[in-house]
Image (cartoon, rainbow, N blue to C red):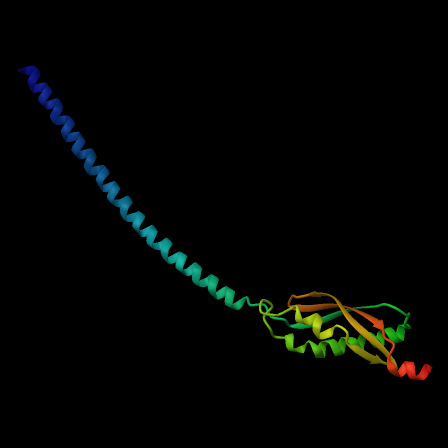
Length: 163
């Protein structure tokens, strides 16, 4: 009987200890569960804010063409420094006039394949000489850069003067 009483007390102790442990751990689990839900809610709000900021940044980040720059290389007959300088200024001014429609356009929406077609095979008269233009390269950034080759063209007026 004495042993039975000790065994019963032992089992009651085990049950009481298990119950207390269960209650303590249960409170901690409830606290962790609520904390987890709160953090999930904060994460969801932060993800929505991040997405909204990304969309806002994309709208503001639209890159547009703000300037036109030409890089001109002369081929064929050698021009004097004055003639070359004059030709650069004239060609630069004319190319900017032809391409002014590109200013203010979004870079992503620009049809860059049309730029060479606007300039290629055009002739410009400079101080009695005709120069033909050929686009070698187009670099599309906020500053549109057009690499052009200028070459002498025999015009009909020059042929009449010779004949």
